[in-house]
Amino acid sequence: MTGMRSEAAIDGFRLAYERTGSGPAVLLLHGWPGDRTDYRAVVPSVSQAADVIVPDLRGFGESDKHAADPAREYNAAAQGRSIAGLIGELGLGQVVLAGYDIGSRIAQAIARDRPDLVRALVIAPPLPGIGDRILQPKAQQEFWYQAFHQLELCTELVDGQRDAVRSYLHHFWSHWSGPGYEPTSQRLDHLVSVYGPAGAFAASIAWYRAGAGSVAASLAERPPEPDQRIAAPTTVLWPEHDPLFPREWSDRIGEFFAAATLTWLDDVGHFSPVEAPDAYVAAITAALA
Image 1 (cartoon, rainbow, N blue to C red):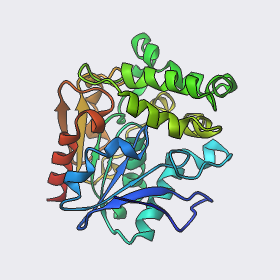
Image 2: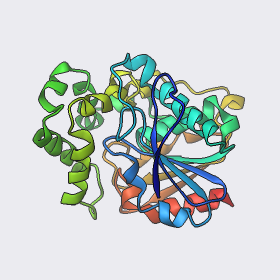
Image 3: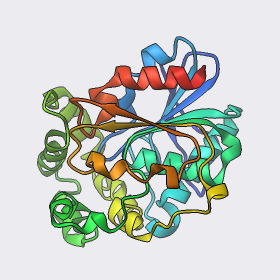
């Protein structure tokens, strides 16, 4: 797997990415608080039959981080522009696009806005259809961080403070994951190496400051007309133990996707490509076929 950087700067942002294998194109989008290494257990098997590209999103990992208006440069549409630019630069044509967490939101935005680029989707929550259920007390006990990320206090306490970054990210990687997963010290060391430098954590939460988090997105969403639903064949991988997105919130997928298949991931938490890489391999392989 070779690390590379995009030649073109979309809106001034260049993306770091890794590419391995050959064949039809597969593009994998990570979540928060992760980076492109979220898929390191998925890539080896998929790359035996595909050209696999795994970028760091804008503001993450080794990709560019700029002090820009989050609402213009870090929302789902802006992240999607960078991914579409990378697809074009590499001449990939239509891709199988996979993502979880914010990577899922970005994959959905690309499939909606640039359907010519997407052969199929393989996504995990969040998905549309949550609506105002996200305001339920139990949900708000989990989504407190999205309001916290709006505060300057958040960056004052965490950004550039490596011990604080480690403690903060460890909370999410431990609390959001399933009962069979706990982040290793090596995993936390890596996360601190990419989120710990001054400005890195602040750039990562620009997504939430753009109003792109699940609370804002769920309250704003409206079902499209049936002929305006996402048309790409879509496989939804829904974990059993994700405290953010309970399985009953999967009940409205058909209002937003024209051809979606729902697959339960038993014994798995929020970090599905890390916790259940074989499920991603199987779903992506099926989408390629």
